[in-house]
Structures are given as structure tokens and as C-alpha cells.
Length: 308
Image 1 (cartoon, helix red, strand yellow):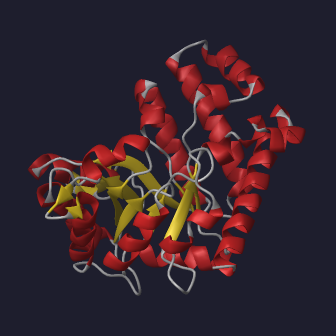
Image 2 (cartoon, rainbow, N blue to C red):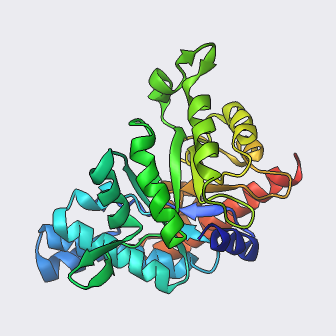
């Protein structure tokens, strides 16, 4: 799947992943009213609104980007009905030939980690059949429990030709409380980066490994160091836009060929219609506002890479 991601990035000319992290406050009133009229102000009604919101955005941007990243927590808060909307979203994105990165941040040990890997990337045995559950193409993985928590994902990646993105240096302000702690004079995130490189050598695609890394756009100098530590890992870069990252911050995450990184924007794309810059589209054309935001983001990243 890493090969497909690289091919899609080359084909679209956009190293962009749209974070499908919907909140009810992002959804236009007309969609909410329609969903609530059919299902009431219920979890089912909320899930229906989310699904319709996602579908409109996907329809407007699917030809511009290689991948999407639905954040499962935004769906789980609505219980089983929310998870149904998550599944519908994953399936629809795959119908549109988008690479799907399940932002699930799983990480446990032994059979529990193996079960998470099966749920999101693999196949579960049911009687005489092998069935896929959520069936994303990639999943995000928390490495805090060590190799015991990551290896089951690596094994599934080998078998299914899918991938993971391991949290190495995250974009949130307090990430340094643990990730920046010095061990023998070096920050912890560098040691995690070395493990990502080690795990990745076990399952290589044509040019990059199935094992990628998450490194926040808000820490560009750290990204420069980690790019060298993990030369074959694709880097998923959150923190663009709403969290303060901009194109100029991203150049160190990429290799000289313009590949090696994919940049996430969530609110900046799916809630673009609420921004002053795109207010002209209005709530009725929120999908078109998302499309305009993707085009602007693509141009920002391209200009930054050209000027480095």
C-alpha cells in the first residue's frame, strides 16, 4: 500500500491527507436539520449528519488528494452509530480510490495488539471465512509499550501489504513532557525514530517502508533530524493550518525528490467554510470551500518546496 500512496502522491501532485475529523459544530445547519428530522436528536441522527457531511467533502476533493485520515474518536463519541458512519466513510473513500489512513492510535501488547491490528488492517477468522472489519490501508500506532505493541501490526502489514504510522514526535504542545526527555544526552523521540527505521527494514515497498512515522509540523527542526534517522520511512505530518504549521515549516520533512512526507490538515479543510477566507462559499457550498482550501494548501506546500 505504500507503493500506491507514493503513486497517488505523484499522480495528484499533492502531498496532502485530509483529516476527516468531523464535529457537529462543523456541519451546516441544513444537514443537521435534515438528519434530525429523519432520526431525531439521537446518536443515529448525529451519525447520519456526519456521514452526509463527509460524503459531500469527499466528492469535492477526491480528485485532488491521494489520501484521507478519519480520526476514529470523532466517530466513537456517538457510539455504535458513529462507528457505522466511520465504516461508511472508509468504504466510500476506497470506492473513490483514496488511500485511507485510520487514525486510531492503537497500541497494546500480545493478543490485544494483534486484535487491534486485525480489526483495522487484517482479516479475522469467522468459521471457514477470513473477513475484513474496518479495512483501512494504514493505521496510526502508539509505540509507548515497546516492540510488543508494534510487532503485531508489522506482521499484519507484511501479510496484507498495508502500513502503519508510528507516533514519534507529535504536534501537541505538551508532547515534550515525555518525548523530549533526554536519555544518555539524546531525546526519547530519536530513539523511537531509530526503532521505526529498524521495524521498517522488515517490510519494504519499492522505495519506502510500510512502517512510517508521525512527526508534527510544529517541530520543523526535529523533523530535519528525524528525516535523517528514518530515511525510508514516510512521514505523516500533522499540525498544518489550525495548529500553526505552514508550508515553510515542512521542507525538512521531505526528501530531495519532493517525496517522503504527507501533510495532514483537518479543520483547515473540512471546516473551511467557517473561515473568513472562504466565507464567500457559504454553508450551502461547504464542499466547494473545502476544495478551495485543498488547492491553496497544495500551492503553499509546492512553493515552499520549490524555494528551499
